[in-house]
Length: 136
Image (cartoon, rainbow, N blue to C red):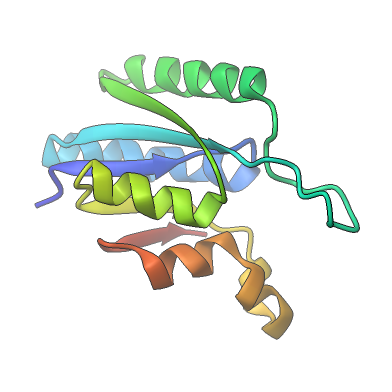
């Protein structure tokens, strides 16, 4: 059913909470697992610093750590690092890799009217070429 699962990761607590769900689904469906981390270039017009990752070194360490975590559970994971706007990049990679499912953690920022339009999760849900599973 889910031959390829895309798991976009960052340094958030919500990503760490989604790991168990990802591992269970990958094992259940014997899926190919792709770990994705996106480096977003800094926005020169932003009033406050962005919470997204902007360092390739940080992303490389994050992906290596996540790959090790899944390897310890007997899961072979591929890692992908991309640069760009996070939500669009996640959807582009899902399309390029023919993902059958995207699994994401959610910070809950999209629960307000203001947060809904800015939420990466909300944008991915609206743009995704495949189903999206949100792990609270």
